[in-house]
Image (spheres, rainbow, N blue to C red):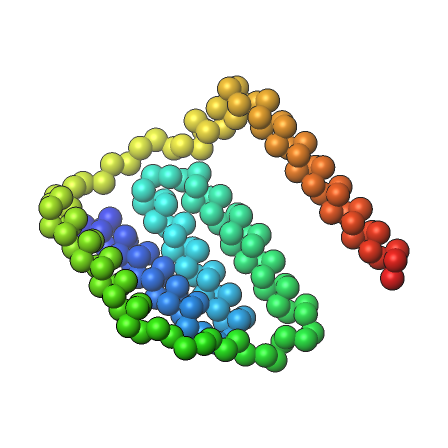
Amino acid sequence: MELYDIIFYLFALLTLVSAFFVVTNKNIVHSAFYLLFALFGIAGLYVLLGADFIAIVQIMVYVGGILVLILFGVMMTNKITDVAIRTGTINILGASIIVGFFAGALASVMVKTEWHTVKPVFPESTTRAIGELLVNQYVLIFELLGILLLIAMIGAASIARREKELN
């Protein structure tokens, strides 16, 4: 077993274990912190696949934006700080059938493709190529998306200001 395989299995284990705890934990703050580890594990898998740009976007958007938004939303809300989230009944039979189906499909693919003989290919960095495409070929779309996001921010600020003036 090579170092690449060991690192892959560590990231996969980190992702799966923390995703399990995200779903099963009753405390929403703890679930958010487990989600942090799951998202970092996915970013690590992207790095191993050679998709460095997607890994950085994963960390910046999901970990830096969405997860922090969830944590601040939970911590700033006074009404739900002491409420534990209750999950309803868990359908063990249905979940076991689905997990068994996907495990069987994965095992059949692994047996047929001789996955252990495949060596990882490390491509060049994709960040430079994506940056050049955004600046050269897709510059109009990139600028239009920037203008659209600016319009959305102005609209959100005006709605928030209008509601503040009404109170």
